[in-house]
View 1 (cartoon, helix red, strand yellow):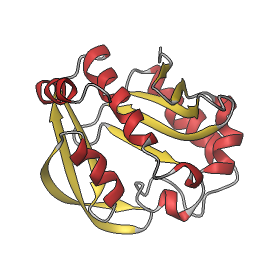
View 2 (view 1 turned 45 degrees about the vertical axis):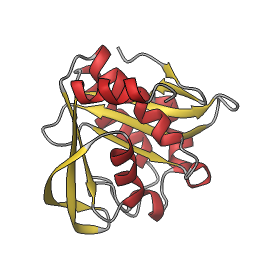
View 3 (view 1 turned 120 degrees about the vertical axis):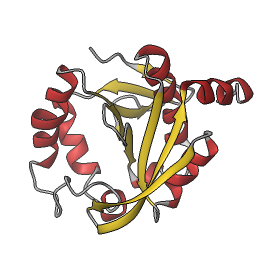
Length: 185
């Protein structure tokens, strides 16, 4: 069971098959997909969102290996603006994307604070890791600003090709310390 959540500006709704039409319209833009893993088909097929939700995300959620939410503004709760997920994985526990119209407003940072709290406080994990392309500077800034440290450099296959990637990490103790010194987040 994946619970709903909320932040100051966002509602996080558990991902559902009914979300597919909105995701299908919002997601397939090069600026959104280029730094996602190459498991994302490109060009994005007309049934891409249905396939992802029905055949990938929902089964993983049912098995307790993934927790996924659509992101919605409190001011427009029926409109999906992005997606955030947490997953059991050795080097990549958190991922997200946001529609182009809502980028650069701090919304993903806000969602990540909620997700990190959920990861540590509700799920009880001791370490959170996030892998990201070195060229994905906006995503790197979120990790840096939220107290994560770079622990390794590898190469990964993204929609845009094989690229250098960094693994970022934060422990539960480091996260709690960051939260204590950043109470407004």
